[in-house]
Length: 96
Image (cartoon, rainbow, N blue to C red; front, side, top):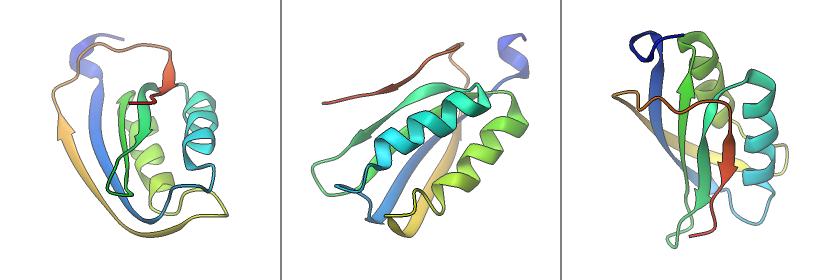
């Protein structure tokens, strides 16, 4: 798949989303969908993520972020489409 056929979305998740294994679940869900990107906790209590890949799979992952794992209570998400960067294959948990 060429970079022009990919979609990239930058996401911020608000609510009870830290201390509930959100990042681990996000990584598992991304691997199932075979999308690339990353997820991390932010100092303000939100979770930030970037997802890149086939548009339908990225859209599905954005939908997942609206609910998150069973232990989370997502209040809202902000999702903004960005220019694809050509990320492939790996979805990492970032610790900074």
